[in-house]
Image 1 (cartoon, rainbow, N blue to C red):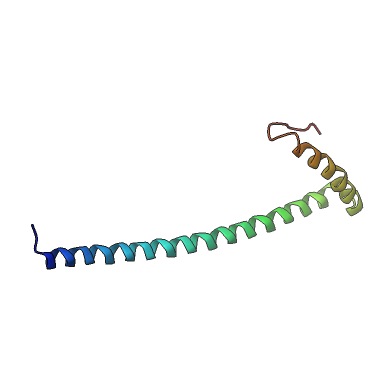
Image 2: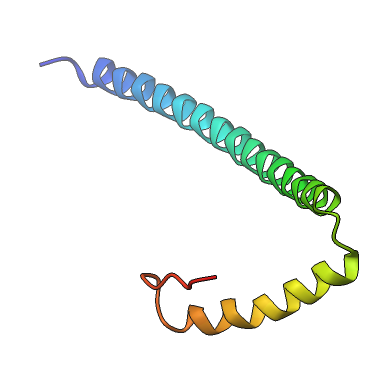
Amino acid sequence: MAPKKTQSQSLKGKLEKFNAELEKIQEQKEALNQKEKEYELKINTLQAEYVIALMAESGKSFDEFENFAFNNSNKVNSSEEVGEGHVQNY
């Protein structure tokens, strides 16, 4: 069995190593969280651009899209009460 001083030094080294690894993991986690937020923003921006492009290509007026959105939002809200497995026919 190793002398107590050597054992404590070994354990101290392991403790420092694990603390350093934990710090590295936490930094990676923060970086991933930031990257996730950036991607969510990019996706939202692209979705908005996509909707605008669809509107422009369709030849419909803004009022027609607004009416479509309001009329269909009631259908979507009522179908949410049915459950996840239900797909509403359009």
